[in-house]
Length: 495
Picture 1: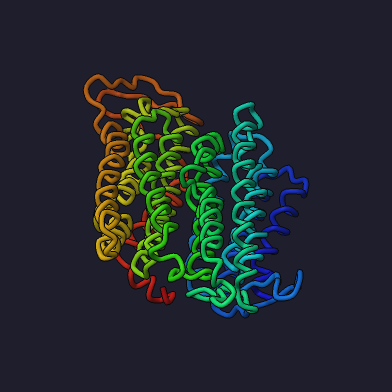
Picture 2 (picture 1 turned 90 degrees about the horizontal axis):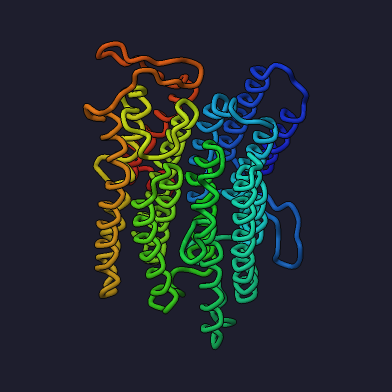
């Protein structure tokens, strides 16, 4: 029952707290905080003591079931981390938005859906939870209800539905060619006797499924929704979308390839080669587009397109080392990109600055915030000892050890080029923020809630409140922790 309670509680409690008419917003925020902390506690209990549960059967051997293995536990921890940090941040940020209870209602439904994605025990259950995660997060993109927000939300919805249907096709075929017990098991559950003579059809359908679930992860050619939807959403939603919700596509691909079909079935086939090429193309394209982009949140969104394909590249190697590298990058990217989007939200909330060119001198006004931006950027670029360095190191080693000719050499080369481009579009923001040069003037700068003046050589600070800065610090610490203890973390969860 713990698994059922773990995702139903935040959904029900979040909706109830949002529906109750309260004039005291502080009281409502305390109720939200209590809800997520209790939800986190239930999830921890589920990780430690949860037992598999089957709710009901749709048909013979087709069940709605929930369980947790090492991979699900690890992803669930980062789901809790991102949603908890973003909630406390959003208490302050959402003061500038309307219909705040509506936002938080869908926020908690999305939290419950992502918990369900992590705890799904088979492909059918995963598919339903995957769709719920999409439907519950579309309103977060639509929240402002402007023309651009509606267009972005619909684009996200249409791309996601198309991708999910492609994934569903793969689910049908995997169940047909699978053994009676279709619960996730590392190595897959295909019945090779049934598959014999139909390998070509199954490979094609699996490739379609990878493309479909890859839509949520922003893999080319189904990436178009991501740089449109993420920038238009409120910053807390953007951090969740890029940091963890897009990882639902990664989870679905891991479950399809490694826990249903089996990596051995795909290794050395055209599916592996095509998948790797698409990942490399997405990494390079996303980095180039981010380098050219001038709007801060859109730059970070293109960066997400590139960085999540690092994870997919590791998965496409179809080796234990590649899977380890992909999971390490999932963790480091979740913390780093979540932090960067929250920082971008602070620039909007406090200074109403949305473009990279407007951030010159911001480090003088809010040094703590800019230092968090810099630390998260170090991880994203891959500077030791941050998590991004460890994940890219493992990915490069896994590629070089694959013995796939040019496809063993290209990944480290593309990773290096992408790292240089990442440094090129992130580091100048921090450098210009701290060292704006003599031409920078700040005689009187109006910020939300206060006025900051330059008096002689002294610039008064305008850091956001602790509810916004502490989540940044926690996420930076998580990115550093992955870099130092990442391998040990994988060992604890049996990965």
